[in-house]
Length: 215
Figure 1 (cartoon, helix red, strand yellow):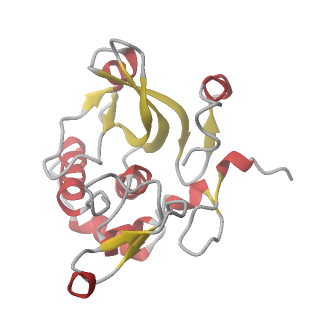
Figure 2 (figure 1 turned 30 degrees about the vertical axis):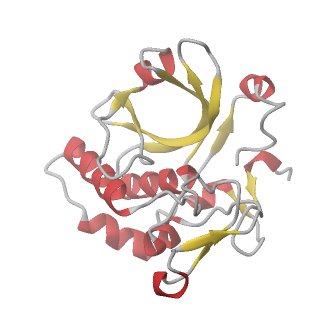
């Protein structure tokens, strides 16, 4: 059986490798308990409650100069030991499972998206993690690579930006997010949940000089 190497994540805590679908932990007991603790009166309010909880609780790792430390491996320590929660050492940054992220309260964009996708799917809401590029809508300039959650809420699909802290942003219709109606344009090239992974080969060719995998 052939394995899609683009779906294998090896930038992990101890150098182990996992299939990307394993990062949606719908059967994990800690995640199921967490999902049960977040309530909404209907599907829309549940989505908003999960987004708000994540934006409030999960922080994006920055280095000691205040720069995003996604180019490095993050080491976590009690704040009273080194006066900071982590430092960086110049190794590839790591992917961690959603339950590890919730325990540590640190995540870069793929981690926070996987956590949110996990919680939504446990709640029975159709949701997926998207990987892609972020572009300046006016100039088309590539601003960076990113991950986010896409969810179907009462029919329409919305982009959920879980990397913004601490106040949650509004749910954005994907037509606006992907179609150039905002100042920045999200350009997805991969999608996955706990059961499947799919990618857009043409878009990957477009970005092939700038991204080797999706991390």
